Image (cartoon, rainbow, N blue to C red):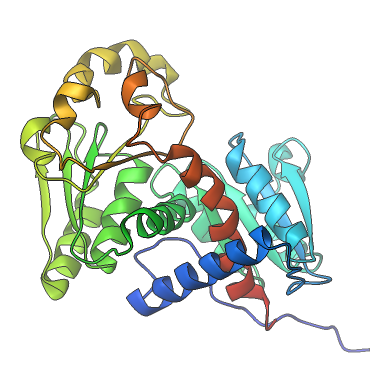
Length: 316
């Protein structure tokens, strides 16, 4: 009997690899799935489908939102830590990807090196989703875009300001996502912590096509000027714990606080991918205040992930 093989589908590795129209379609799908859930309507679009979830980095929101989302779509999700599978004992990514492709319909991977996700995508016969790498966090930014649209009722023409570590996966994916959707974006970071030059260069090229601005500077007051959306992230991400004390000193002037936010628009929206360290990258008054939408943003991980899964798997 001939072996049954699966057709390779589109991956979701970075926002930059997707067209504006595709991102807009995902946002519309996420909004529709969210509405259906709120109204108690079943959405069994992926009945019988299985998502394999590989975690080399621990997570709260990524794991729960993907697992719950897959179940709400009628499918099933398998949690696989690096200790649970042979990757942790030296099996190659190539072999792991080929084997898992025979068992599941898609793979979501949350790991350190972006090259790991790219290698999985190269050898897997099923769609691969980047749940986070040190270089990109595309699923989070899709949720951010959905949250911004819900609160501002548009994306095009808005200004996003990111403050803190510019060489950060959130900053990189925000650069890609903002310009794709016709938004201006500014990044305030100290020297030595600027965005990846290739990602920044690609964002500037895309911005020129869209007629929007990409600005990078050291002055948080200048970069946040007239911002519609203010975004930050922790100053020391997973894997950077040994640098934490140094980073507290380097980034102290980049804290999102009441004084700095006076330079943003009066109705600015504050976002943070969480977990947050109140008193470090953001004050409690901002993250717990009237401008914050961080819990809407966290909820929208669920709906954004469902949209991605439906897009990649519904017609498999």
